[in-house]
Length: 67
Image (tube, rainbow, N blue to C red; front, side):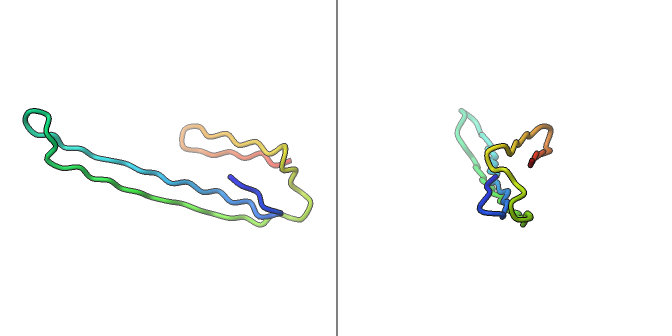
C-alpha cells in the first residue's frame, strides 16, 4: 500500500508452486505460477494523513483506515 500525493495504490504479487515427486523423492514435475494485482484510487486533496493510515489484512480481507 502506497500513497503518493493523493493517489492511493494497493498492489500485490502472489506466487505458488506445485511439486510432484516420483520414486526416491526425485522431481518429476515442478510448476510455478505468478499473479499480480494493482489498483489505484484518487483521494480528495489534503484529506489523507499519510502518517496515520492503518492497514490490516485478515482472512483474505484488507482493511484500510484513512483519517
